[in-house]
Image (tube, rainbow, N blue to C red; front, side, top):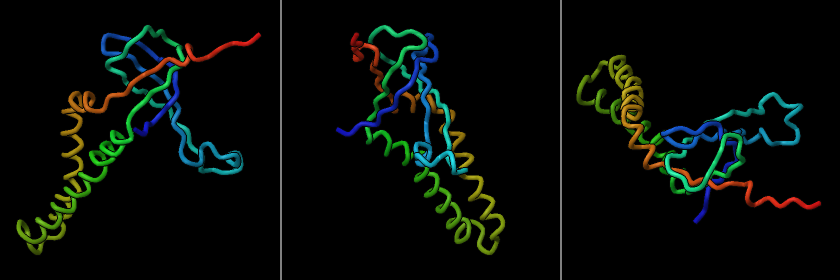
Length: 146
């Protein structure tokens, strides 16, 4: 099974779980020529780990693991489904609901992703269960040689 791996630091721990801060780079963010280029980009993200085993404390270095299938599913939910809904709303509005009223059809099509993302936001707790990451400590794998 292919895995998505990110490395980060434990940012906080509370009753909801472990919160890990990772640095996410754009494709050119790790390029050697990034000093000379204006398009390099780095963002910090907080990943919530709801269930985990082991003892962790704030500042621990960890590795976050997720399946590539989960990544594909996230792309489906975030990009493909809203695109399909938008196109379907546009086609249905132009042909069935409001023929000849392109402005109204376009407005409905543009509002459909907003409604979709609001629904995703409302049901985010269920999605968090579906998109769960594993965490592994990096501290135990490091050996110090003197």
